[in-house]
Length: 101
View (tube, one colour):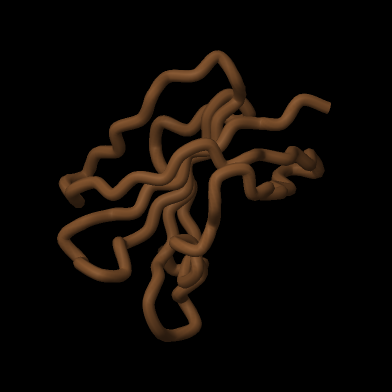
């Protein structure tokens, strides 16, 4: 995560993309406010000159064990993850689906 964010293995843009980033203090804490996202908030991703808008569907707290448990979707999916700010043994997972244009 030297460049603030990492696209995790298993990503297959635009079908599903997993993005992880640090939270906490310091300049590498790119997802410091991820826990403030609410259901239906919008996230804009610009990647390879392609702009997509996603909507938050679900937030969960999962044990940090190298895996992310998600519900499979028929929509293009964006998964954001960082350390859970209140207990570093857990991770915060924000699941989003692409908004239809």
